[in-house]
Each structure stands twice: as C-alpha cells, then as structure tokens.
Length: 74
Image (tube, rainbow, N blue to C red):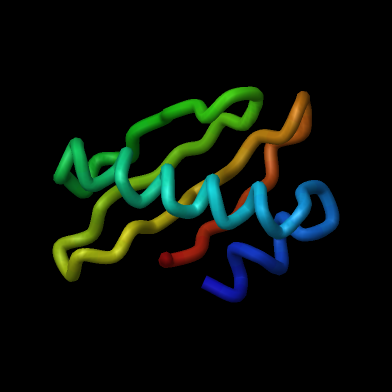
C-alpha cells in the first residue's frame, strides 16, 4: 500500500488518495475476479483486479491526462 501512496502523492492530496483507495477496493471486490477492470471515481480513472487472497492489485491510476503505472497491491 505504501507504493500506492508513493506513486500518487506528487499528484494528489492524501485525503483524495485514501478515498480513491477505498473506492478501488470496493469496486474491484464487486467484480470478484482476477480479470483487470477499469473504473472511474470523479475525474480519476483506474485499472484494478481482485486477487484470490482478498487483496486488490492496482495496475494504473489516471490523473487528468497522465496515466501513472502503479502496480501495487492494496
């Protein structure tokens, strides 16, 4: 999860990162497969997949026109 914050802290405030983190967890869990799904929270887009262990792997987050490769497990 630290990797998730490290990649995004330059572009987003901590409160937005936390909100996005919780949203991505709920979103990926709703699909419940290890296939990557793309979603959007407000102006932030993301790609994530639920893992069999119950964690969620975030592949990338898009802030504006910039797509940030995250590849972090949360």
